[in-house]
Length: 282
Image (cartoon, rainbow, N blue to C red):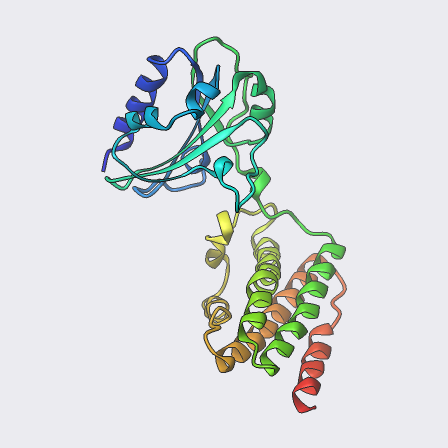
């Protein structure tokens, strides 16, 4: 695998030898001061360019990055709508030595929009001195903020209401239906409440990492084991166990959050447990 020094030398050479590229920036985890570097980190880079069509009309120029084995171009896909601003174009590339490069092309004329949309940007090359003075990169926008009491209650309302959909799916032996609601809604709201729990213990704002990858750092061993158990959905029996474990973990987390933040705790979890038992006994 090429090391980081080799990769940044490569990027700088590409930019310096192509007059169409006016700015090179670095983004993502390699800019985040709170991320511990490792060999698996992507290289998230952006080129601010003139004449973007001269790049996107062919992929041949991408060979300068190395032996590419696979690529995704989100803005060229039809099944999955792109979420980039109009006129931007990205290449997500895998290379034979294990390197992954996420390259975005941004027209120079949209530079103001580019620099305002992400706090984790570091300018590496600015040929024309057009980049604004940027504050130190920060992940503050991605941290868990102290929730209002309404946020806590809305999270609980969504979690508890949809848990009855899971129960009905399991009673009907519709495991895929039940698991969709589990994965798309229950897990999301459970992780949200556990994020609030982490913040109430360690202080807000709090960074639990992308997709909550550092959340376990703020949970007890028992809570971590319960959370992992909530993801066992391969049969009706395990899904039922996961549902009850999720209710138990959510209830304990919400109680502590409300107590720590001085919010009123409403014991709605017990009502939903009773409702689910009613459905089972029909």
